[in-house]
Image (cartoon, rainbow, N blue to C red; front, side):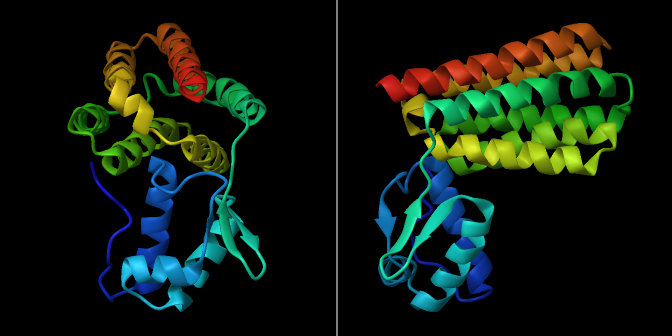
Length: 220
């Protein structure tokens, strides 16, 4: 499994630190509710506290962490109510948008999306959460981008980032992440076949399935 919390190279430290911390939060390596200090994280990354503070302030603006004066930064916690709200919004936005883009995507883009779908599956099978998360986001944003609505993409990206705060490690360890990953190929089968209604309905089931996995994880 890829680990985000490791020493970093010296170039572009702020961006490197931000990317590493975001990955650690998304994968669950940095735990929701726990407080982390810039000096301690700096030691982990092999850098001074300054780029860590700068990166953390960027992540505060993204809603991934909360700044605690004179203490450090706490990873944002996501409640069951928050997850319900996110899933509801995704249901309203993503399935009808996928229905809209069916028939608009050329052959080369379909091949690109299929490759991304396979990369999601391969990452899940390899236990590489960072790769999984990146490919999963790339797949859905690329698919939705054919609607031509940049604001919609920003909203979906923010919603997906919020759900990733829950962490994926238990899903990976139970084997359920591979099952969820394979659903991306079904989405592509329907899109390539031009089945707009079926693609919309299946994406609704996919989002509902993922929400069910979040709920199951929180009970374990």
